[in-house]
Every structure is written in structure tokens, then in C-alpha cells.
Amino acid sequence: MEHEIRTPPQPRFIQIETILGCDADCPFCPQKKIDRGPVVMPDAIWKKIVDDTRGLGVTYRPFLQNEALIDKRLAKIVAYIKQDPTARAEINTNGSLLDERRGRELIDAGIDLVRFSVDAFSRETYARCRVGLDYGKVVDNVERFISLARGHGGRVATEVRMIDMDLNRGEQEAFVEYWGARADRALIVPLYNWPWDEGVEMVRKPCLKMREEMFFYTDGRAVLCCWDIAGRAVIGDVGAESVLDIWNGPVRLGYAAHLARGERERILLCSRCDAYRDRRFEGFPD
Image (tube, rainbow, N blue to C red; front, side, top):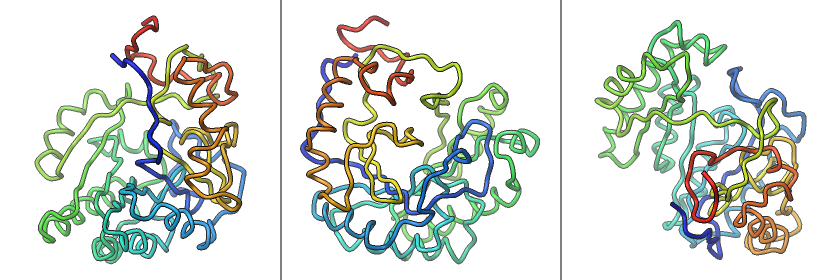
């Protein structure tokens, strides 16, 4: 049960969409529907986001609505982040592009955590939920990276995830047993409904997603939520403002106030979002 929604004076987590694109076409993900640009975030923009928040103990995630390894600059970006001894760098990836060379580059750059989204424990199920990727190749890549990470004294954490879906529910126990014996963590995570997907209805509850996290598009615009694929809740532009000015600015704080009161209907993006529908909040109906 949540008693109140607080937002700190600075973000704890910053996600940076350094590039658009993904090598998979998963049925539960709207990534292929994105029609904005630029495709590649200019170096000056991601560097400014990092520079604006150096020394604040931020965890940076150089991906958003994309496959992180599509960006060939990824190791360079991680190394730049890790020039700040207080910073952490982590990614989520489907693992398809993580060959040995790129794995070593990320480890040498100082990556702290790699989360692998695998979502199946059989080739047949994988072909249905991670369309366009090769299951055997992904498993080989994940296992090799885990071995490389452990060879560096456990400095790099690894996590293998399965999104809870009807089609993989019969494989979840085997999945956790197998990957739990190899990676640092093996998890089953919920499948969220993207706002504005067909049939998604708003719940009148607070939202925790934007409380400590900040999200940037390739063009430098900051948005309220990582589930905003279409710019429905833009809160600022790092090309014209500092990261902290956006974070503590009237637009984001106004949105935060509405969400603390469960007033999702007052924000276009959130007016069709059911996130945290099963979570209990004090003063709000279950």
C-alpha cells in the first residue's frame, strides 16, 4: 500500500533513446509504429544529458523504445557515462546482436547490468513472441556474455527475463530454473498494456513510473513516461533547457501532482493507461 507519491529533486534513472530501431518484431511491442525522428540521437544531445547530471548518482539506461545494441556507439556511450564514478550504466537487450566482440567492449566500457529479454524456453514459443530472431543464437549469446561477465569478478550483473504471457506460462518454471543457475537473476515480469493500445481503459490510481525516472527521445525531447511512443506528454527539450530544469519545471511537476491524485484523465497520455491497476494505494479503490 502506498501512502503518498513523492518525487525527488533529481531523477534517479534516466533513459536515453540514442537510436530508433529494433531487429525484432514482437507482437506485444509498438516499436514498429514509431514514425518520428531523427533515427540517431546526435552525440551532442546524449552528452549534454549526461553532463547535466554528473555527480548525482544517476543510473543511465541508453535505450528507450529500441534495441540498445542497434546503436554501434553503445560501448562509447557507456564509457562516457562511467567517467562519473557515481554513475551506473545498464541496458535491456534481446541479445541477438551481442556477439563476443561487443560483449567484451561493453564490459571494458564499464557496463554495470545487462538485462536479457528472452521470454521463452523453447524454440517454438520463442518464434511466436520474439518474431524475427533466432532462439539458438540468442541463447548462445546470453550464455557467453554471462561467462564473460563472471570472468571479470562479477563486476557486471546479468539478469534474464521472461514476460508473463499465456503462450509461455507452461515454460516459466523451467525458464527460471535454467537461467537462475546461470545468470545473477532470472525473473518473470508482468506484461504491461501500452497506453492507447486498443481496449486499454484508464484506471484512476496514482502512477509510480514517472516518480524517479526521466526519458528522452532521439531529438532531445523529454517525455513523462517510457510508454509514450507518440509524444503525448512532452515535458521539455534538453536542447533548450537543462535536465534538472526540466525535471523541476512546471510541466513535469504539474503532471506529477495530477498523478499523485490519480487524475490520469487530465493528462492525454495517461487518460488511456491502466498501469498499476492491481496495486493498492491508500485512499484509492482497488
